[in-house]
Structures are given as C-alpha cells and as structure tokens.
Image 1 (cartoon, rainbow, N blue to C red):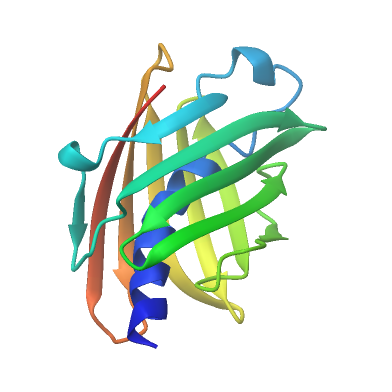
Image 2 (image 1 turned 90 degrees about the vertical axis):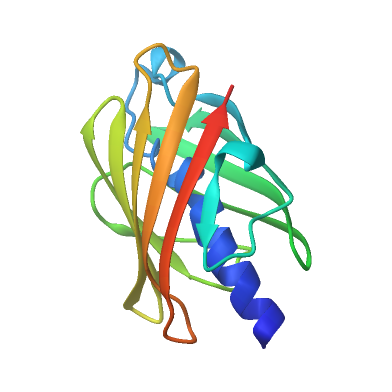
Length: 160
C-alpha cells in the first residue's frame, strides 16, 4: 500500500503536465502545450516525496481537445497512463494510473490550466499548470492531501 501511495502522489504531479493542455480546440498545432515534455527532476520539488526518477508526457491534438500519454519511472517502478479531454470542465476517465480515475480540466488562457484529479468522485489533487508563451518550458504546482493524510506540495519543471 505504501508503494501505491508513493506512486499516487508522484503520479499526480506528473499528471499535471498532461492535463493542462487538454482544453485546446482546432488550433492545437500552434498551442504552446502541444509536444513532448520532459520533467527536469533536478529543478523540481516533491513534498513529501519521493520524486519520480523521470517522466515524459506526449500531448497531441485529438478531435476538439488533446490526448495526453505519460510515461514515468516512479521511485517504485514504471507507470504509463493516458486520457483525453476537451478541457470543458467535465470529468474524463484516466486509464493506467491507480491514484485517480478522472481528471477535470479548465483553461484560463492558452498557457494556463487548472486540473482537478479525483478518485471515486472525491478530489485528490488540484494542479495549476503554466507554460511559457514560447512553449519551451512549463511549471506545474500540485496541492492536496495524499491517502495518508499528508499535505502535498509538488512543483514540477518541464522542458520540450
């Protein structure tokens, strides 16, 4: 159970990269969030931790929204998961991640999104993701409480 919790908390922070871009419509090819993002573990902080060893998120246009596929190496092993959303504030299913089963994405601007992750209908984590206007860097800030009741504050730094 402890390993699952660690994967859950770190996975949520990694998840932010994918979720933030899911509200894009027809112009996704020029969207600053579309592309392949790599986590810069050295610049990122995970409290209480542990941090992922590595993470890559591929964000691509899919219909009226985006599809996100995350491939990460967590402290206790690999994790691969994905989902698609139009970024319309509706819950969408997440497959492959035991820490949450839905994501709810809203977008304040082309470079800023808020993602609410849920498990069993209850909010697990809220993530704010901000990409640079040139689309070369992105920062995600994750706030919530893990399954053990510990406060979580993760800041992930990503580059294309």
